[in-house]
Length: 427
Image (cartoon, rainbow, N blue to C red; front, side, top):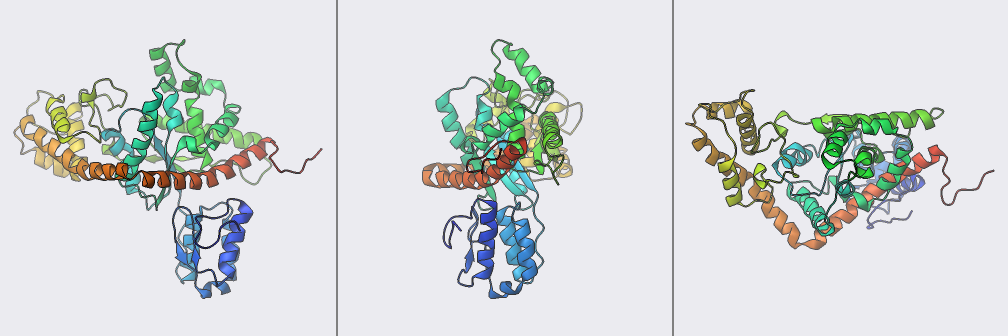
């Protein structure tokens, strides 16, 4: 095998994975088993050598299982414990445009952190999605690294989740072209986001990339055989398109095969208080693209900035503060307070009943946000100071992602009839 004890990873080919696993099972001189990016994962006791059933079943699953899950199962079974269930895989990402704000954090990143143990995670900075509209190259560079650093500062652990930059894995772009040749253009023209943005930008200035954005998103998901995708309401249509493309491809190219190339992903429902609205309009989503910075709380805002924005945020003139479907601003601010303090909706409602009015509540809300973001900001600036750490995390994440993505891309191309370098010619 390519990798030996003490090296950084496993062989990337299917035969290499099986060969590496058998090597670990059969050689007592190999005390440690490594997997990228989790290392070391387990010790292999000599009792494992007698487990013929284990060796047979694990070699079969080695072809498609994530190596970290696979080796964890080997370790558990060898110690006499039940092998853990293979985790379902999750893929998600945030665009490196503008500043990461409280809505991105509560609606996506914090929930990724909370679910790290439950899933096999791939989190990317989706920089290819960030260029569908005109952009400043230098700002894209800075924002890409800032976004990755905020992933880590928010609690995403590279020992449990792969963190990488989308463009560092070229299979994303290549699979997008292949799926472009499968997806009917009528499907893309029906996408609500395309309709809204093309009307706003005008047909002469809107890019092909904006129309094709959902196919790139489908490629992101399908490359990693993700079973679940965390989505909000505004992305549900794109996820349904991903499922449609996967089904269409499998129907066209995999009918005579035992299974299709792609898994049809399911939506991973976000928590009810995860949708954060604008500070100036309780009916509009908090957005990075809004021109007015006072509409959002950025994760790197200073305490003074946060207090100023909360003090000036829009409220209503209704007496008292409570959850009410007819009071969008009150619901939004109470929801933020609920998330920042860790209290339940009932606890916040009970506390709100004791407040005199907005003058009492706003300072409490600002203090809660500042206290919650303080450790995130502190960790972020520590990461920024250690450039080699962020570089190594992104490199390891990209290498781990490449292993999975390259297998899916190869299967896709073979299903479509492409020749691959090194194949024996047939006539």
